[in-house]
Length: 179
Image (cartoon, rainbow, N blue to C red; front, side):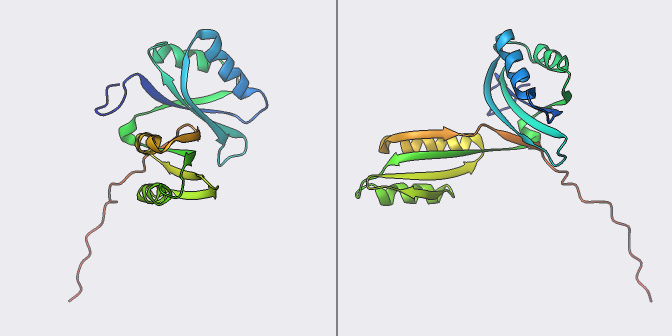
């Protein structure tokens, strides 16, 4: 899938699996055994406690997407696999980052974080820890802008994604005016 403005090497797969012990280990083991590269991985239970949703961003340069999905379907606990086109999905990620921010730089860092609708979650003498969530590309931008201040530690959650909702208006029936 070639999508303008995205990295065509990466594809987002949403794998619905039974919510049982060891399922994530089997999925990760499959990727390791086959030499498939995982760019991002996030997993959590769904609205139905019997299932978990694994969002995997895969590097298709390491293996064709079709081969990856065939191997995943061989796992007993896999219920459904969907590929999400970035144009038709909502993707989010969370980033926690500790940045050097002495007295002279602190207000600049806070202003930058506020610009990206983030928030300061911890304050030290010469450092700030901030939390920012949003689209992965947006977090890449924030990270690049914070680098000159000095990143002490950084952790990103990995992408989570859902299909976009239908935005077409429902059909309306004409209303007759009464005389």
